[in-house]
Length: 455
Image (cartoon, rainbow, N blue to C red; front, side, top):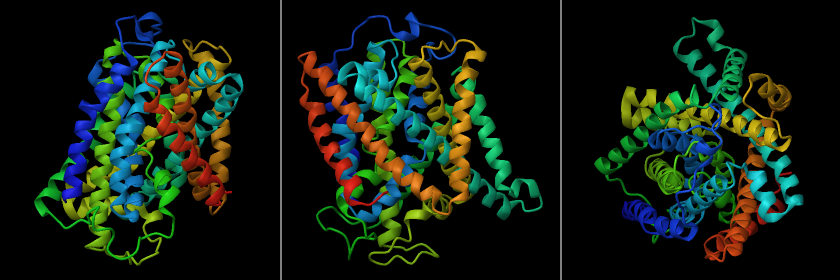
């Protein structure tokens, strides 16, 4: 538990010390933000700072800091180092700078920012790459929560046959995605996201309390792992792809512009963008610790954890449910449903909303009217439907999409980090804060692409 406690303290101090340093490097001022200068009542509008923080947190979190941390815990306590140092020096800086660059550029989406600082060719690549990545998120986060809801209804309310049909849940979730993508941001997302974000945070805090009540022996960083790793994968680069949302995730740079268009003052940037990422790091740290306790001390019923085994990787949702039931009882089960069902759904809807805005900005199509939003949404949802059908028809479809999403996610962070570096260099500011993470993540993405056989 010593490593866990030190890691918690480090993340909190990282926000106040390094977060302040990064803020000073950027230099927020009092100029009008896009929420004021370009208000349209749909995507550009001022929202309360607490609500923006909660939406930003859920936008970037979803199930990432839960599932990724559980899978990353198989690498042992070295996961702590990546979560802490990756979050403070790479992920939070990446999220803050990308959010602030969006504000400074009129609420620009990621491809526009890439184009401005890296050139037109990278912009075109990034446009296709980011839209496809966001549609993959939408497809993955239709199928996985639908499967979970189907199983839940089969176990708990088998008498209602329609609720035990996965097709029903796929259609229901997809319909929600269409509505949430089309509606003004304050109508659905602005109302339900704070509730789901609170649930996700409450679940993490409750588990942390249980950790301190039980005070279990968790492998410490100086002890190494008891026995071999619980995975056949290489720590480098797989750890840095597996734990993304708890350390650094390129997906976040596609989400930050959503909130950059709702921020009243640039000075709100550090608590919203840097703070949300540090909060996500804390959630990932808690889940990694709880997972390590069960992996190395009290194996879960039905899970034979042996060195080199992969029994855990594909069962993260079941592990979340089991942990919550064992430690938090009935209330924990309710939270688990929110954690493994609502969280991915709320990642999927904002991913598709981001895709809509990126496409609309590229073709210069104003999104104030419903009719013009439909021009973008109809072909986009048709493409997501095709991807979803392929995923369901292919036995390994989910694994293929997830592998490519993991690599694409971190590759997206590479482009963003290099764009931030160019901006800081042009402004004669301390560009080393982004250059070092940019070089490191470039190596991680390239090694993973060529060494891990994801094709």
